[in-house]
Image 1 (tube, rainbow, N blue to C red):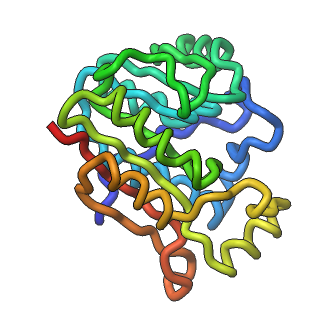
Image 2 (tube, rainbow, N blue to C red):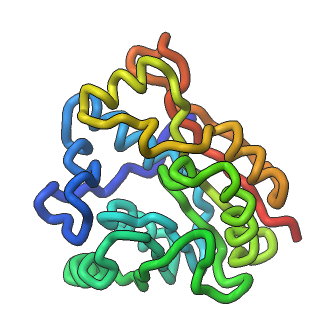
Length: 217
C-alpha cells in the first residue's frame, strides 16, 4: 500500500521528556531508521481524521505534528513520559495537544470521547491476560463507528537478532504476540483490515503488523 503521509520528523535533540532507552535516536539511522519511520507512517496512513484522536503511548511526541494536521483535538496518554514537558515542547512548535500520564488499562476519559485511538508499538508490552481489558477500554472511549489503529511487531528470529545488535532483548519487553493482539481486538471491535510491513531484505517476511478496527455502531 503506498504511503501518502510522511512522518514529520524533528532532529533527535529536539525531543524531550522520555526515558533514556526511548528509540527516538534510531529514526535518523540508515536502514534501521527507514523501518522505524515506515511503521509509524503505515499507522498514520490508516487514520481517517476528524474531531478528536487519542494516542496511547505518545512517548517523545513523534506523531503529534502529523496528528494535529488530521484532527482538531489531539490527546495523548503515556505511562512514563513527562507529559507536561512533551506538551510544552510541541506547543512551542505550534502543535497543541492535551497529554496525560496513565494506562490503557484504565484510561481517564469519558465514554465515546474520540473518533480515533492510535497505539504504535504499545500493545505487545501488555501481558496476554491484560489485552481484553485494554481492548474494552479502547472500545469504551471510541465513538460508535470510530477507529482503533495499532501497530505491533511480528516477531521473527532475524528481528530478535537485530534488536540484540541494538542492545535490546525483546523478550524482556514484548509479552503478547501480534496474533494474540488481533484476536483480542476482534472480540470487541470489527476488523476493517490488517497490513503487514516487510523487512529489509523483503525475503525476511513481515516484521510489523498494523491493525485497523472499527467500533460497531
